[in-house]
Image (cartoon, rainbow, N blue to C red; front, side, top):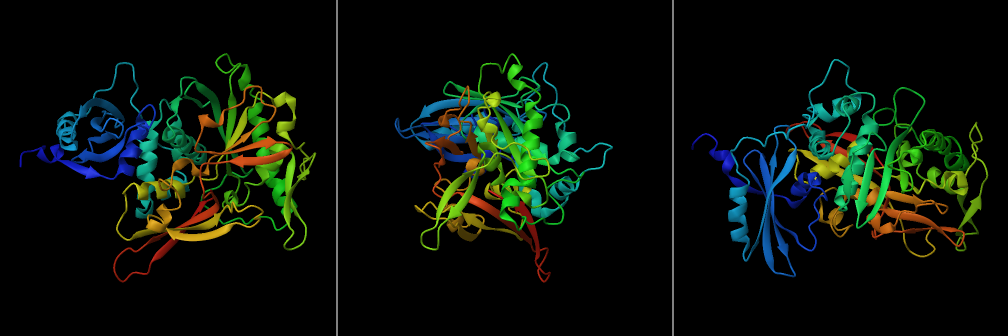
Length: 471
């Protein structure tokens, strides 16, 4: 075989692997009304592509992507229609140009820094775990592709991810994956806010922020911190206060006064990295603070029902006023977007489901599902092997990036966000004095942990690692 012949060979890959590559497309892996019929790559992955089937026209098209010299994916060909998938694959095999040199860097574009090339600063434990363990190879691959898909990350992005701002940068990658997965155009044409998203004429500016503890080490790796035993403390105490301080700190920057933001929808996106493990239990504190409403239960067994108890202040040491969404001074905040899944565990699962499955590595996800039965007050427990048919069957298309994304809408918003802008999120809104939700998902994970088990070689004991993740 001649040198380079192996690079020209076209081999099938999973649809989920190609969809991860396709996050680099302007609207991600969304080709309506067509859908992916088959996915492929050449040799060692210098090119990839798919065959699309339009069920209405009963026609096939081909789409080819190639790596640039900085490893980013670019679309190089889109062709069709073809009457058969074989004809589309014949063209795709040629247009992927396996064995050719990478695509050149466009004039004026800066080369994106390599994710694994570290500088003089010491790397953080999370980055070390990501890059030095076989159990986290799936996460490394998923994070790498999301980083390459970012439209225009700032110059410090890679350094931050490798060091003390790992959590913040991981959250940005997670948001990008969520948005592109849903067919949104995502741009980073300004220093701030972090993202501009658009779909079908609806748009929003989004600034991402993480709630961190007051100590240098935040979230991720460390001794597991359990929820406060006192329910009031958990809902209105320290956790709610840290959310409040983080959001209010960002709002002091007056993003709404920027020329490109003024008169448009604007949202803050927040993730919790207050403590190692806090993301599994702190989520309820956020809507409590935003709406100034504590979720309580009244009545005896069999007659219990959920009620909302208005509160005016949080119960933390600073007695911060509750109800950000009750204050007309913050009407420029269209919504607060939240997720507790911007974690190594989420990226590890998504990389694993995409096909990067190191020998001996298994994942078990356990947690609780929201019970949508009318009047139900308790969640439904689950424990399933990631990648199993039972796990995939929880959702129509398997696990998605956006399933843990929540949008809390401001009832006083001057520029509201339409639900259709972020259709895959769970939307919370006020109606007739009650806080209600709307979602496309029948099964919503409220909290979970992912156990990663690695068998090093036959005869060795199985090593288990618990990943922090709540959804």
